[in-house]
Structure formats: C-alpha cells, structure tokens
Image (cartoon, rainbow, N blue to C red; front, side, top):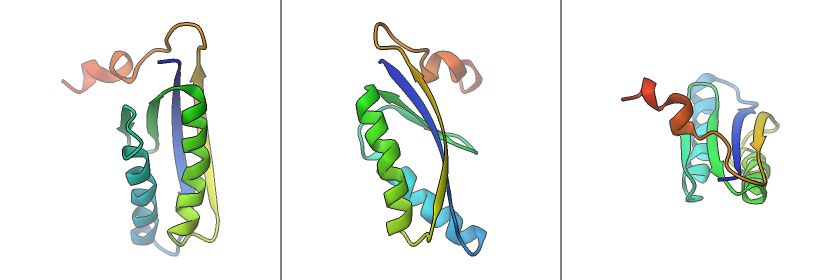
Length: 98
C-alpha cells in the first residue's frame, strides 16, 4: 500500500443531527470504495493507491454537497511512499483495539 489518507469532512449544517447525517453519507461512500479504512472521532483514514485515494478525497466534497450541505471544508493528511509501503493503520493503532 503506497498511501494513507486521513480526511475530516466538515460540511456546513444547521445542527448536529444534520451534520452527522451528511458525514455519514461521506463515510458510506468511503466504505463502498473497497479499500481498508478506519473511522475515528475526528477523521476517517483510508489506505490504498495514491491516485485512487486522491479521487476519493475529491469525491467526498461532492458527496457532502449532494447530501445537502451548502458548503464543505476538509482537512486532509497524506502519507505517500511510491516505492514501498507506508505505515498501516494496523501497525499504528492495532495494539489499542485488541
């Protein structure tokens, strides 16, 4: 796995319930992409090929808008290693979730 991306999607919403509904749609989209992912309390981390992950990050913004957000901000962290593998989710936090 050459890349790991953490994305925090922050759609504009009138209340917490609507915010969670929109974020859930973004997470559902990520889950359907077939890559290993981990949902945390502030961001979702995805592992896979760099270009595919960049497409997912881009589409997450569109998903939030289509779900009803008038605007969306995102914070994205990227670990990319074209030769070899980046440190996996399991290696980073697996020992804390046994």
